[in-house]
Length: 141
Image (cartoon, rainbow, N blue to C red; front, top):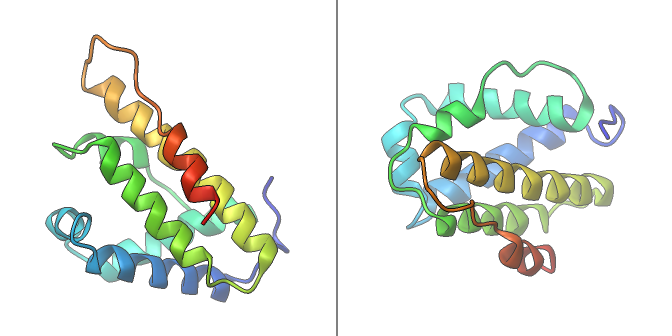
């Protein structure tokens, strides 16, 4: 449920900045993002809009994350798991408990959805694998 009072725009900006700094510094995800993000200020602005829309219901985000992620070759479940781990490590430092809890719930759903979509787009004959095992581990962080 979106809630305009769950957090401030400044809190969302801090979450996005902190998280993507972790991503950029990460040995597994950093190279992938470096290859696909040419304009970090623009990307961060879009991510602030995304999380503002998702958490606060501002409807500022315009775009299709599924299509963007489907275009990246060689992603595995480990990449989505690492993304989630870094996200939850970032939110662990948030003092606003309601924001931390809701952002963690949404990040898990987002990662699962993007991973399913990625697999389906790759034309696999197998049913998509889920991230459930890691989601349980990450949610305890």
